[in-house]
Length: 306
Image (cartoon, rainbow, N blue to C red; front, side, top):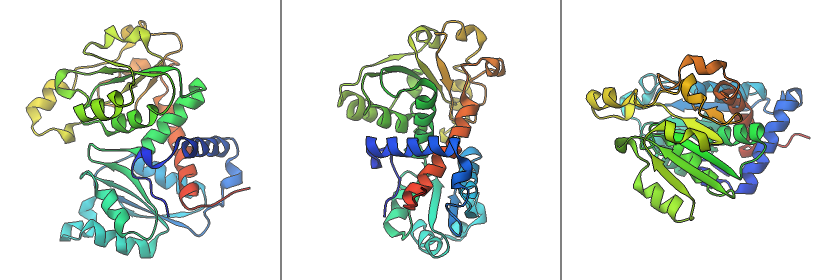
């Protein structure tokens, strides 16, 4: 039985197979409409989510399966003190596969050690978000035609941004990828990722503070919000939350084919005027998320559709 806890749980070949399957699902949705008839997905979301939870649920429903679970720890037995290990033992009796989001790093890994069904890490604290990474890879490959030979700017909260951490882990395995890390000093990429991932694999990167200084060289710009829920005090959050705002003027500095991605939700970091720019593909990115999660569910459940 296979789980998805970290992007590195999948080889490059396995990722390519999931992306190929997602593309086929997009092209032939009716072919997969009953692939999961009789199957159940449990969504255990211990912290708020819109896109990740609903896209997992939509993915299972599109495959003909059913969904059960909770969208808040307050509505679960966690409020009574039930452990993650006990919860997953119970859920394994009710469902065939589980998507879990938890504010504590490593909680999905703990669940996987006690589970008799596949676990999908739908985000654990500031650690990893592998299904968002698959969404990002599918978006990039579908829109750019490749996952190699790209310069990608990662902008905003690089310290707590689990989507950024997961994406870096995945992209370093492709050829000729360069990172431009755009953040204030307080929200820089953690040193362990710079040293253990980028430096270890001899991946070229530069760190800049001003977004304007990076725009002209990017093939992709990955914007992130400053995450209020990761800050220890309100004062630091208020000081940092509007540090970067992508607007039409900054977009004029970019290449004609540079694409803007964002894992969403956005707050103030992308002006709504950018939505009209054809290079802004973050809402299309959310749609790709449904296809890739459909492909992932089929893969983990080992369901083949001919």
